[in-house]
Length: 440
Picture 1 (cartoon, rainbow, N blue to C red):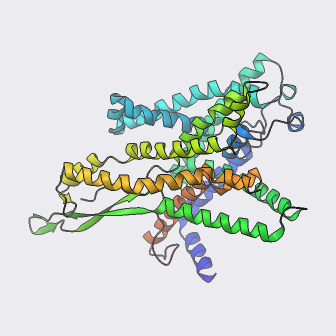
Picture 2 (spheres, rainbow, N blue to C red):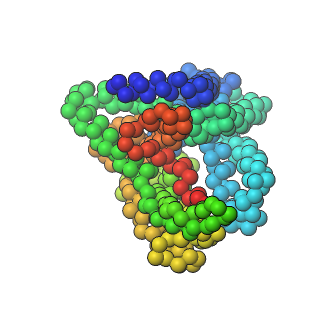
């Protein structure tokens, strides 16, 4: 306990770190306040009394906005349109050579960021009417074309404001602003979900305190497994040749390329869920959907979860291939006078890295697939839907990854000023670790 208090004191002594933490907390507070501001003209009491279904897509999307989605808030669309636009631009970087060229240049990256913002506006304009008609009950909103237009403008501008908040947090605060906004929205739902689980377990037929403690222990073990997944790396030794310039000798040192077990991060689950949720969208279009469509769209059904796990494994390999380029790594190594002991530079080095990457990606992909379907198993075991979402899936991985990234930045500030880190043994490794940069 004393070590924890000393660490907090050390964090507070560093003026820059203290300022960054306060700016981050202040901007996140602005986001949380905005998530409770209801769209003008919407009757929140009528909307609360009208049963909006609660489950399925609405429940999943509400998690990422901290409940703003179901409250008809001005921040209802949250940061997700920007995430969708970023994913589209990344995929274009694979298929379009002109975009690939822009990604390699500083000026090109700035232009791509601008294009991503324009695409975000376009996505918001298309998503906002669908959100209004599908989520806000007809009795709770005005039947006016002018109100519809102003609401679309408000939702679009609010998303751009949330995006601006995220950029300011990244620039002047602590951690990745976009990721922190998503995480704070997820964490906002946790106290209520856990309280409902406690009330349910302590009530008649709920299983009592013992079963609740078993749930918490299993949940903590799952979090530990996710931390191992995020931090797990395979270190490839790289030897750099000696170079003599004048009276000085350079190189001759051994370094490592840390290949991450889960180089794809949380993106495979986001992609996979976007695809397996399509039957849910289709089922909602019918007043009485056919039975086969209901079974496919059932989030606790066997077909849905098998498809989700299969898609997660496939997308893990796909996104890892985008993130890590063995040929580029081999070229960078050769250019800097580095080589893997026992492996010839060039093509053999690229093949060696590709083979190792394939080996470590398989267990990582399978574990990621299991994490994706764990919430369904938790619900089958009697855990309420709200708390079950924290047993795995996108929610848990985002929380673990973002917290590790933020703690890594805090630790870097401490170590730079010769204070002890957050851990006595080892160092915290976030998912955004600069793992693939080559040292000259």
